Image 1 (tube, rainbow, N blue to C red):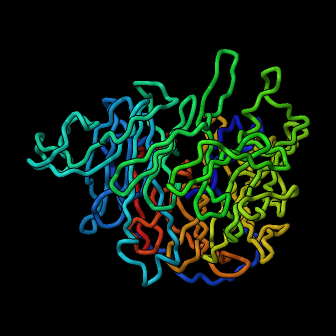
Image 2 (cartoon, rainbow, N blue to C red):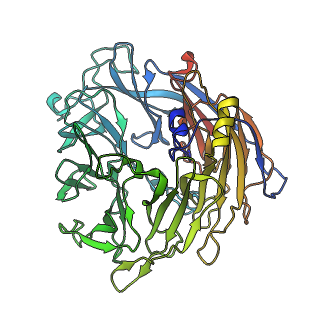
Length: 559
């Protein structure tokens, strides 16, 4: 997965906290590593040129009774019809397995993620059933929850056409137009939504599929204007439905209001072994405890936090005059993560602390407040236990267990937004970007300095005003339990720094793999597609890439 999020050139010049652009040039390091390259990267590459333009990142998930994961592609054809296509490996070839025409009222999709522990994948005790747990793919309209399902095309098929959200199409694997498709989107629940539209302009990747009770079965959380619907999935495909008084985020405008889904977290807040639902309020956490029957308390308990935290980014806040917050004197704390950071089983709080005395004088630190366990409740200290900080403005925070020790490392980006740096960027068309990696010590503290710093040069186009983003990804491509650091080098190579044990988690010298890199680095991701314990690379191309690549996605299977 890519570490950083895309942000436009205009946002950079306005000095927002997002990250930039396209990686190019060389990568340098200021840390000492082993010079030995333990493995040579080896990939088997497959290309698919779809018959529609890809509009979303291709998703890897196990949704069909087919060996390994399938690849989920969404797009629009020349007739403006929207399609779902499913690809998979059969007899060592990547082929289309199914294709469904999507109706115009669908506006979002999501799939439940399964926890993948590298050490478990490498263990000989891992069963085939554990390795190939099924996932569920969902779509939503303004009033319906739809699930992608296979069904037998036989005379005994009990599914009726009016139960299916599809238009008949030719079977992608047959020339017969009369053959019934082997899968469909089936309505599984009525819902209410803040997206009150019967015709969506596009389909987005949502965040409404969760696994709140950690049973590897998809649960659904959907907000409307008054509350949040919680649908707990059961093994038979049904749901237990409940409504909670969790309101959406409301941003008032002069001509009305904008509504968006609140960011909801789930973690065990009262040490009963069950995850609870948490929403960040103003200076407190709004907690709905999970009960013995798996449902949640309808009345929230509020856990106060000493610092003035918020769940909304500062640039979305307004003052009493309806204006953006004054950046000449800004102190702001926004919660970035709620979960166990140091592996002690207690929920912790990660906060982005923004300090600004002007547009060109801003810094972001990340404060970590370690949870304190009470008898049946949790509290947080007034002062942060440890702080992630470095020169420049930090952004793109990510936690990931790089060295397989069950303790997450921190990966974060930093850049200088001083006047001189902005002028230099305008003149040269590039800006320097640092990638910092921090390791936690035995006292659950991160060091004052990063264990690893990589510097990359970022380029952008003043003519088009468009920007991409770097490939900065982590992937265990050789299956040894240590994740490699992947950095794009121009648009035609990937630099691979192999993982290792110790304070320096990557070797010094990179091994280069020649390949075409998408301009938008987030279009490259790492996932174990064939479930062999090695993470593979999955990438597609977008609007900023050459036109002949905009319908293509590629799979690089790690050998």
